[in-house]
Amino acid sequence: MVKKIIAVLILVILPVMLLADVLLFDDQLEPADAELSKELKEFQSDSEKLDQKIEELRKIACKTGANAGSKQNLAAFLMRKLVLNRDRSFETNENMVIEAADLVPGHPVIETFWGDMLYHSGDFEKSLSHFENALYKTPDNIKLVAKCGLAALQLMQYEKALGYFSTAMENEPDSFFLLFSAGRCNYELKYFEEAIELWEKAAKIARNEREQMAVENAIKAAKEMLASTEGSTKEENQRFVIHFAGNSQNDLGEIAFDTLDEVFFQVTDSLSYSPDVKINVVFFLTEEYYKINKDWSAGAAQGIQIMIPLKSGYKNTEYVKGLLAHEFTHTIIHLKTNNRCPLWLNEGLAQYHEFQASNGSPEEMRYDYQSIYQNEFVEKQNFVKLRDVPSYIGGGSHLDVSKGYIASYLAVRCMADFYGESSFDAVLSALGQGKSIDEAMVEATGKNMEDFEDEFENWLRNL
Image (cartoon, rainbow, N blue to C red; front, side, top):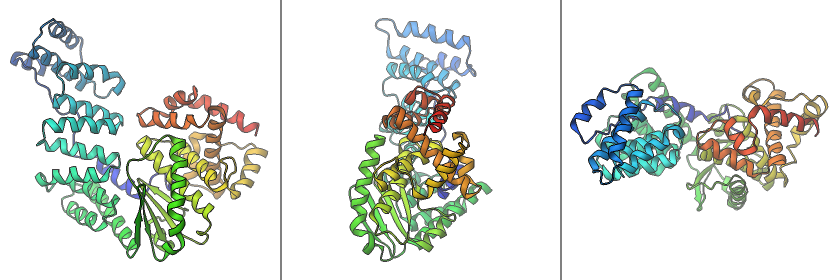
């Protein structure tokens, strides 16, 4: 399950990231002509006059034999228009940045701005590529180093991100943002002592109460994880790193990797996404798990980490397989969508794969859901609107929580019935590109959410 929608540490990190010292859209491309440089500064808002100037410069730059200076002049004015319209969608601005890049190929300012646009739209993979292109041309640009680190962090490429942040800290050792971000990378890589050390330095230079609270909570989480995994054993293969608490390796060692490999191929094939990072799986002693995850859950997914409490029944391969499939699905969705997936779809897909793994069929739901499903959905036809799923799952009675999960699962089954499992890839890919759930559903099913809700209810009535 995605406890409280997002795991505790992510809730701690996000407010701080909003205060990051790495600014987007702050670089300027200067015209080659000094007089035009003065004129460019006069344009402080988008206007018809700016468009006219761009057209004037475009005619000059497009003439046969036009020199590099005239092309840079046009590119500079195009970039100013982009800066003034930076809040528009990436698709709206894309042709303009491509035109500028064609005029002055490989210019680090244009590459940086292109990366900024993509980062702002949520396409962190392409954003990182452009930041790295710019950094290749300007290797001493510490601001760019930090941007590369931030994009890699969003992609959960923690080793790469840590390398960039460490380089930046050599020049800015007292940057709260860099200390906090490097600590985050160490935390995700299970270097808890290093994370604590960096965060304790950050705590001393926090600039406001919000940052202070964030870093204190992060230190607390790292110390709890350090205490909970102390004395654990670790094994890894090409896809997973498994941490076994206590003597759990004796119970789980033989089945853990085989089970994870089965789950890996089931989920990645279905969702058409294979991670390029290793996934951490931590089996906790039960009491230690609930110190970290205060609310009840059978397991939790946080970034590229899956956390499972050790309970009786773990020698039952089917139970383990279903549980790991559920949490691994959350991890893949997080990676594929850059954490942009609505709760109903996230939980619905996780259960779909859980039931497939544990029961051999995605249509055979959990036994404890069957009576609720029969009574509430089949007999009473008390359906749950998908937009209301967060309120059902986030609080209320056990019945309401269960209904929220069941509705999510059934909605995904409905998608599979009408549009096939390929629709899962289509909707998640669109979400990963920064599109809304309405836009993503149209791409995947041809229907927006309102129309899909109607189709879903009709499907439920005929079950």
